[in-house]
Amino acid sequence: MPLLVMKFGGTSVANIDRIRRAAKRVGVEVAKGYDVIVIVSAMAGRTNELVGWVDEISPLYDAREYDAVVSSGEVVTAGLMALTLQEMDIPARSWQGWQVPLKTNSSHSAARIEEIPTDNINAKFGEGMQVAVVAGFQGISPEGRITTLGRGGSDTTAVAFAAAFGAERCDIYTDVDGVYTTDPRITDKARKLDRIAFEEMLELASLGAKVLQTRSVELAMRYNVRLRVLSSFEEQSDDAGTLVCAEEEIMESNVVNGIAYSRDEAKMTLISVADRPGIAAAIFGPLSDAGVNVDMIIQNISEEGRTDMTFSCPTNQVARAEKALQGAKDRGEINFHDLVADTNVAKISAVGIGMRSQSGVAAKMFQTLRDEGINIKVISTSEIKISVLIDRKYMELAVQSLHDAFELDKTA
Ligand code: ASP
Ligand code: MG
Image 1 (cartoon, rainbow, N blue to C red):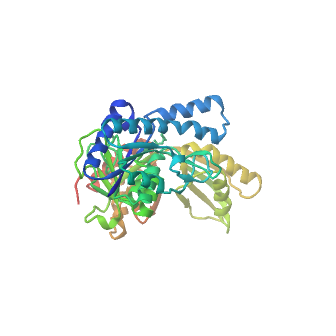
Image 2: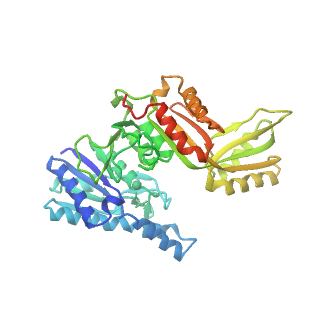
Image 3: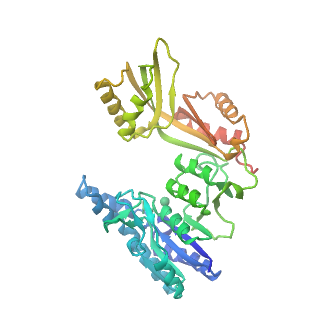
């Protein structure tokens, strides 16, 4: 039997009505002759509530008990989904992570999947079961304790199952109807993409287009799992949503396929550090040890052996970065005159695999921002992405004008 993985996010299983609606979608695929593995999230809001209870009891909680508590939301929806399917006369049963067993390492609250044996579930498919409903987000450690995969981890569960079972596709049902060229709340010209390459989706996911957990896209790319993102609230045709797939499956594509933004960026500048071998290591080593996610870096031109070093990081890590750098200064590892933090910046990125073969994208991006009178503070580029830091108050304007300039409202 061909096999599909169908994942339903929290809003798609938020109450009994929605679980019924999701189960109907599963029924449609079963009727086409598929065996289906359904991965469910907890009901919308439930995981936050569970996390809140843990925090209330114990600010310095035992991560193993945190996982025992926060994994429970998915246990409920898995059982309810299996019952709903049975009511529709579809042979189904639920599986908690440990029953599969979905084996992870011991990094509680951020566990990594190590193995998903397929024999238990396949044996049941062999006995006539048509749908295996699996609780997302959870697994079991080598010590036999319940683990969770990090917030949003059900996406990763779904992709991992699709890879392990060789599914034809992994459908991610959510509350948006696909992946857009940019955030439709910022411009009504945002267009739903029919297809997007793994690499592009990875850039958009990590840049804050919060449709899929970044890890799930990495996993999909590594195992070439075709992912479809679609809405559980609309009647669906076979080509609904957005297919996230290998580049080879995309015939024509715009040079730029998406404009992403991130509101919570900060720009930090170390004024006047000694320009000597090892200075970058002396600055970024302590930042990394402190868990600061440094993104863009520029070293300015030197004068008389001293230079300014600028980098960006998430706004909520500024205090941590300041502490790490002050510590390095106190230990005599680095010296600087001042450390200036600008927390009123946003990052705007243009993403597209077409950039690999076409030049002029950066120039066009910079001209567009110039025409709007927007000053660029930091620039960084990769093979398929150009990012700039600008004043946050121009964020919407920058996204809109770049979306227009690259004609993202039109298909290739
Ligand atoms: N329920 C978990 C969360 O809210 C996992 C998920 O839904 O993906 O993070
Ligand atoms: Mg999610």
